[in-house]
Length: 210
Image (cartoon, rainbow, N blue to C red; front, side, top):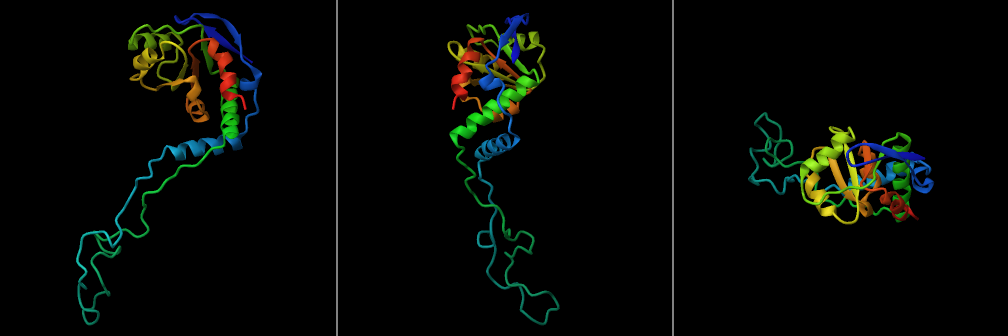
């Protein structure tokens, strides 16, 4: 598997070999679904809450007598059947967090990278230089690669990471992640994967290694 190697000005310098262990792995839809669903669940806050009939404001007095009025029986104006009454079986705060096995994470990440490589959505920069926080530097790179307006993931590592993050954090549809923190959800959720340096291709094997 190969990917195009770009200079920072968008010029294609050539091609770079992608390690088969990472970019030619088995793509298991079951593993991807299981891991991505777990990642999404772990992002949930779980703070949704409604008040039950015991918590809403209201009187405990019986609204009217049981018989003789011609109306339906009523015991409380806090009943879920009443307007402004409590909510029956509503959501309560809960923890959605699930533990994802390390091996499963690695398999899903390799499968996601392989999927993007097969679609020719892996781009590799020869080097990424950003000596000071300037949005126009990162915008210029995206424009040169002709990926503006698309959902992009820029993977960085080493010196200058802070400047790159500060330069690109307010660019729409651009996510910037350190190599050590990428996961299958990041990869599948992005249309283009941009490696900010050809040395990262070698390092990614260490991240995915089981």
